[in-house]
Image 1 (cartoon, rainbow, N blue to C red):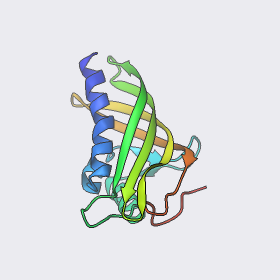
Image 2: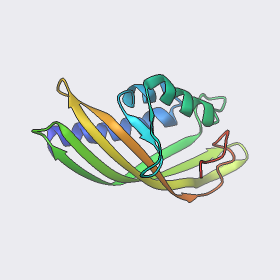
Image 3: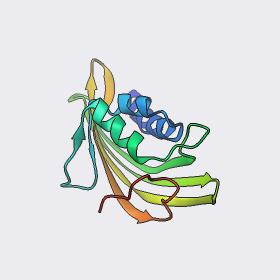
Image 4: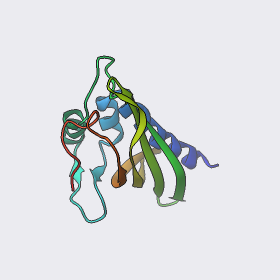
Length: 148
């Protein structure tokens, strides 16, 4: 595995770590240079503060400061152009949740379509698209409904 592949894999894992830890500032830092949104063709949100506000206003946070979730990312496919300083990734994600009133269960599953660019020798997200494939009981996770 190349250094770029390790850095890109770490970015993807760090996103899950931030969101599961309720660290929306850290998550917004990761996506601060990115355009973020739903499936292909949908409008994308840009700007660190707008991205932080989106997540902090839609995810329910519990007494421990977290959403009580675990984002599990699998089936990672990376395509890296080291010379151009660009990369893409596709992966699957599953969100598990266990909180008071909801036993451990998968609540969401889908795919990420990511783009990355290298700035000053450091890889950053430049685009993250969330494609939702399966929806379970999100009533303990989302403060608002999922976009249709």
